[in-house]
Image 1 (cartoon, rainbow, N blue to C red):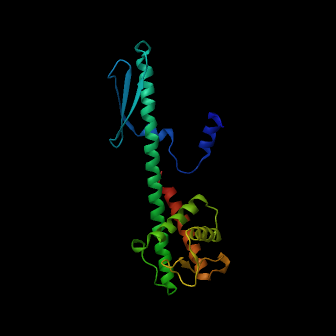
Image 2: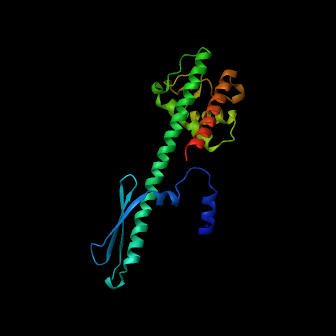
Image 3: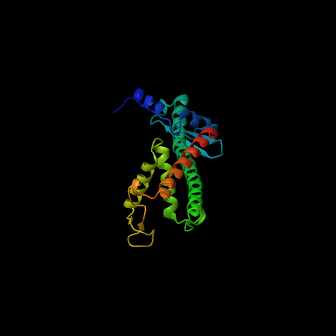
Amino acid sequence: MIDDVELKARLGAQTAPKVGPERVEAVIAERLFVRPTGTLTICVLTLANGFTVTGESACASPENYNQEIGEKIAFDNAKQKIWALEGYALRDRLAYRDTLIASIAHEVNRAWCAYNGDDSQPNWADAPGWQRDSAITGVAFHRANPEAGDAASHDSWMREKVAAGWVYGEQKDPDAHPPTHPCIVPFEDLPREQQFKDRLFRTIVHAAIAAEAAIVP
């Protein structure tokens, strides 16, 4: 098991978005301490958006009560709850970003398909859930694997499809049993326009992530 020093070093080396103690402290707008009984201290923290969290501290013997200690423990207990709230909020923001990037990549790929005579691709709003989920998963893959190339993008997509029960078929048919897709083949066996489609997706995702890093603190 790692010690506190190594844990701090590892956390400091992480570059992906994460909740840190500075963020937790920054969202605290007000703090209030209440002592409803001789041994109980309650801390009420009002956050920047008006939401409140509470923490408690109590000792068994009234003789052991110390206001400073009670308030510190109650404050720490209340503050601990902020981590979960901020973690959820960050995950929600990241999921929204991936969905937005996926929708952009989908629309560009739809335009590319139309340019090549394939008008079967629906717009993002009308796309079935499996197709949108697949695009979002593709964005997450490139976010986690920035060095992955076009073939790796296709391989990730194909693994997802196979795991979901899809098999190779000359026509894409999500309603077949099992569903079929003509692109469930090695990357090098794809038609050139399909290979370029993977290249387009990867390029758009990386460009959007780079822009996001430039404008989002």
